[in-house]
Image (cartoon, rainbow over all chains, first blue to last red; front, side):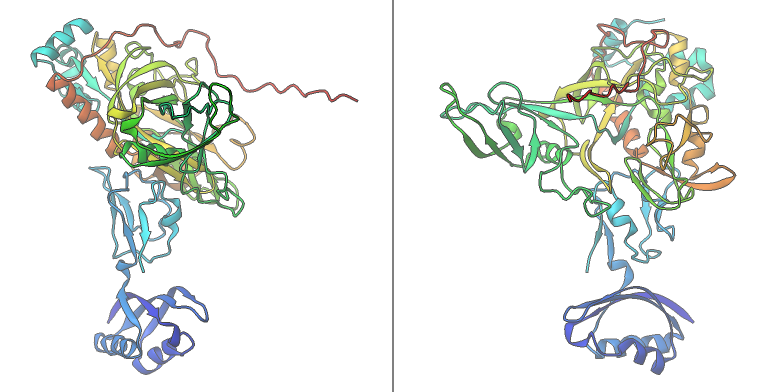
Length: 135
Length: 403
């Protein structure tokens, strides 16, 4: 069993297709929607967690790509601009999953992008606008 | 034990013993106060955090024909600056925002750009767009001016912050049922987080709690350049409750500081955006403490465990001016990542960057060791703990309307 968080980019022409339904139904995967913003006439974005057997997962991702979706691992979504970050730490208690953490020794703030669920709570509260959303 | 003059002689010869406010704590633990005081000449402190009562004044030089922006209006990158002086002088405040910024109309406002950001861009050497309008006089006929300006071309560009370096600060929490957006950051409902803003054991005024060495005229590290303490800061409040080690338990002393913006760096002056609150300027300051006697050393070696701040509710008590503390916590507890408030474990967040404060104390130490930075005798003392000087609330006096 594996569990991975991925970002799906839906081109405009695919926004009204039941792609996630097919993905789950035909590939025996569990899914958890972490974020979705799909509006008609526009591109869509969805962050999901997929869990299942490794081969099912691979087939599932293959299916998504064959439909014309762009599939990225989640960590590509939120990035920290190291030049802007001042390591203050005001983001630390805001992050719901502990992806932003103080190193007790250096007192610098570590960003664990593997833990990040792209909820974007840190984006607006960062005083130096160091947390960036990249699509 | 030693005088500032003697310390400066050692600095010039490259023989000075300078350590940071963190290092001195370790030294005292190893060798004791007496021995450490004999060995150490200077302790360097540092702090880096948002400091709203900051700003810079400029003289942009005279245009041809001349314009008098005094009495007119002036903006830098659309951020209003205060031109109520002579012809081409203006003061830019850190919290100013463009007239067309939506502010908190769509709450919480993002405040992405303002005075603090203009200062950061100027210091970074970027061109900034100046627009001014004036009413025109016989001697200053011009009524409009639009030009790029650059820090290097200005006659004077002086950072002049009239309240920085707070000696201790509150720990902000939210007892209400909804998220609130404050200058202490976003505070989640029902004690969701506790935010603090001080470098604790590295913070300048916490290491010289009675202002024995820091006074008017003290030369300091300011924004990456050299600056001076010019006065006590606004809201200076020295006569507050203190612990036995002399450290105030509530926000107390403050400093007004000044320095040549042209010598500073955008690494140590950063535009700050506080969601739902406004813009500000992140300022880096470091102050050397000359170890003139054992008492001064003792204070300089006070550690996070011995420095306490008050926990204050920012949903009701702070905005309504109720002086109430929900308890206190030490900076050691705050830095552990959680404190206990009303029996609940609350995660902590810091607005002040401790790693940057550390970097400043190291940088100042290296300047002193290299012989680049001499210490100064204060020309006058700051109002002290026995001065009776206090920070008063406003007594409102309703204005009678004519009938």
